[in-house]
Length: 238
Image (cartoon, rainbow, N blue to C red; front, side, top):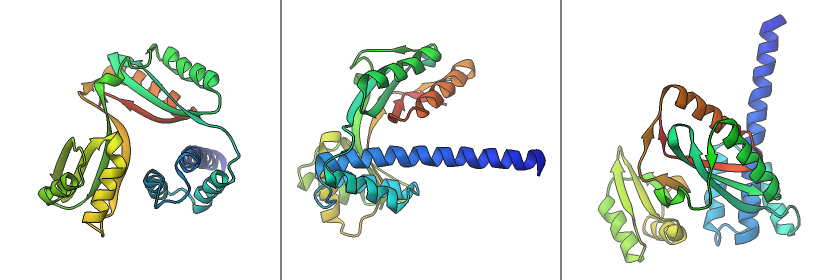
């Protein structure tokens, strides 16, 4: 055994820790989504999309079921969303989305990550105006005109539609998520979404390299290690 065994053991432990963090983040998000929007996926399209993403990321069924059962019970932790904005290495712009049961603790933890990477946390709205809060739906297809017609017939406000490599990507305001998804499912009953998310998309990207890139990767690693952090969006391009 010796060092090879020890290295393998440490690698397995690291992989296990990473999986546990992924499971925990999905569990928390599913619980909050089901508690606020209902546990029935037919009436809660955001929950359905979240469960689909969790399955793609190989989250076990028992983790998903437990989160939904907890939401059914009405008890459990009282998580609330929190969003922080600021400037990362190389003057990049960063948005950090969290679910927290202790906003003071979470703010302190996120601010510590900014400080440790020589970055500056800003006030709400300081960088969000440079991002589009978009619903993104991606699925197999090549007839973007038919997709656009279906969305317009359903009175969906569409930002953009792209057709490339046999896939169609629909971008719409985040407020149009449910309407856009319903319209596509009604128009194309066999549709299967490869991407079904709401994200902050930067209006412009900024290339970083060298020391800025190294520090940026360290910064993102610090944020990823926080249990309360769900998503990190940025305008950096490597």
